[in-house]
Amino acid sequence: MCGLCGEITFDGSPASVEAIGAMTCSMVPRGPDAGGVVSRGRFAFGHRRLRIIDLSERGQQPMVDPELGLTLVFNGCIYNHKELRAELEAKGYRFFSTSDTEVVLKSWHAWGPEAPVRFNGMFAFVVHERETGRVALARDRLGIKPLYYTQNKTRLRFASTLPALVAAGGVDTALDPVGLAHYMTFHAIVPPPHTILRGVRKLPAATLRIVEPDGRVKDTTYWDLDFARSSEDLALSEREWKDRVGTALRRAVDRRMIADVPVGVLLSGGVDSSLIVGLLAEAGQQHLKTFSIGFEAAHGEAGDEFKYSDIIAQYFGTDHTKIMIPTGNMLDALPGTIAAMSEPMVSYDNVGFYLLSREVAKHVKVVQSGQGADEVFAGYHWYPKLASSNDIVSDYTALFFDRDREKIGRHLNDTWMADEDEPARLVERHLMKDGAGTPLDKALRIDTTVMLVDDPVKRVDNMTMAWGLEARVPFLDHELVELAARVPPELKLKNEGKGVLKDVARDVIPSSVIDRPKGYFPVPALKYIDGPVLEMTQDALTSKAAQDRCLFRSDYLDSLLADPKAHITPLRGSELWQCALLELWLQTHNL
Image (cartoon, rainbow, N blue to C red):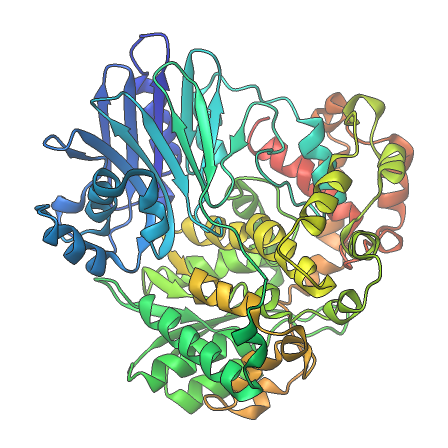
C-alpha cells in the first residue's frame, strides 16, 4: 500500500520534477517507509512506499526494468502474485525481487491490456513504455485503490490523492457544479469521473486507460458485475449456496493474509468482522491481533459495541486491544480527519476510522476489515423494500437522494447550480442497464459498483492510509462478489438480511453475535449536532471564506443553524453537517 504520482507531457517539454516532489511530499503518510522519483525527459514518476511484501530495497519504486523498457508505479496488493510469478517464469521472465510490484510490471510486458484481468487484488498502477511512449493507467475492479488525475493539452498528472495534485499547482480548483450536485443529492457520493473540483478527475473502477504520446486517450472497462443466473445457479439448493459462499469467503480471507509483516483485524463486533476473525482462527491463526474502538455515550445512545467484540475476542483468544476515545479527543481529531479526506465525506464514522487507524498502526501495518458485506449480501434495512419495488428508480432515489433538483435550487445559490439533473440521470442509467433482472439485483449493483466505491471503500482507504496502515477487504474479493451477485435474492434477504452469509457464520462464530440487532460505527457526539460541534459548523459556515464562496442561500443556512435536528436526510444524515463538512474540507485544503 503506497502513494503514487507522476507527470507526462505531450508537447515535448520535460516533466516537472518539482511537481513530483510536491506530490510525493503530500503523500508521505501513505508511504512512510521510503520514497523515490524517476525522471526521463517527458515523463516523471514519484512514489511513497509502505513496505508489506518484499521489505528489501529490491521492491523499491518507481520500479524500472531497463531490459523490458518499462517504468512502473503501483499502489495496492496482488494476492495471487506468487501464482502469476510462476506462470511468468515458465514463459522465461527473470525476477530480481520477490515483490508483487515486479509481477505487475512483467505481467504488463507479457499480457499488456489483459494483465489487469489476471490480477486478484486491490490496485492502481501506471506504467510507461519506453519503446512506444505510451502510458497505461489502471484501477482495480471495485475501486479499492484510488487514482486521481488532471489533464490538459500539454500534460497529464496523476496521484493517489486529490490533495497531492493540488499541492503540485496548476490545477483548476474551482468547484465543479456537477460534482457539487452529486454531493448534495446522492448522500455526498460523487461518482467518477467527477470530483468536487472542476480541474480534477478520477479514473473509474475496472478501467484501463491508454494515453498516447500526443495525449489521445482510450478507456476500456475490463470487468462488469453480472447478476444473470444460469440454469445451474437456479438449480442449487440453499445448502449448496451456503457451501459455495463459505468456500469463496475462506479463500478471500486466506488470500489477504499474504504479507511479510503481521496482519491484524479491525473487529467492530458485527457479523462481518467477527466472521473474518473466526475464519482465520479456523485456519489455524494464533495470537491474532484484533482492535475495537468506542466513544462516549451521548443523548442516551451508546458509543461502543465492546460487548460483542469482547465475545469474539474471548471466544477465539485473540490479542485484543480496545480503544476508548473521549469526546474531547474526538473533537480534537476532526481537523486531521478532514485533512485526510481526498474528497469531502460526511459519514460520522470517518473520525472513528481515523482514530482507530492511528492506534492500530502502532501495532501492525496490515489489517483485514469487514467493509462491503452489507452492499454485496443485502444487509441494510432498506433492501426488502427495494426488492418489492414496482418502480426501482423512484423508490431508490426516494431512499438515497438527500435532495431533488428542486430542493437543491432552494439551498444553493444560482451560481452553483448544474445545468442538468446529472444525479438523476446517472442513477437511472445504472439501475436500468442490462445484466440485473430483479429490483434487488439492480439496487445491489449500483450500491456495489458506485455507492460502495465512493463512500465506505474510499473512507477506509483515506483514514487508514493517513497513518500508513494497509486495510484489506475480503468481502470485496471480486470472485466472491461475482458469486454473491448470482445468489438468489431470497437467500440474501432472509433472516433480516445477509441470510446466506449468516448461514456461513453459524458454523464459525457464536450465535449471540449473529442474532444481535444490527449496529453501525457509533459516534453519537457527531450524530447530534450541538455544543462544540455546532459551534464548529457555525464558525465554518459564517466565516469570511464561506461568505466569499457564497455556496448556500443565507435563509437556508439560518434555518439549519437555528434547528439542526429539523433538517435530516432520508438516510438519517444531518443536512447541517453535510454543508459544514464541505466548507470545512475546502478551507482545510485552502481551496
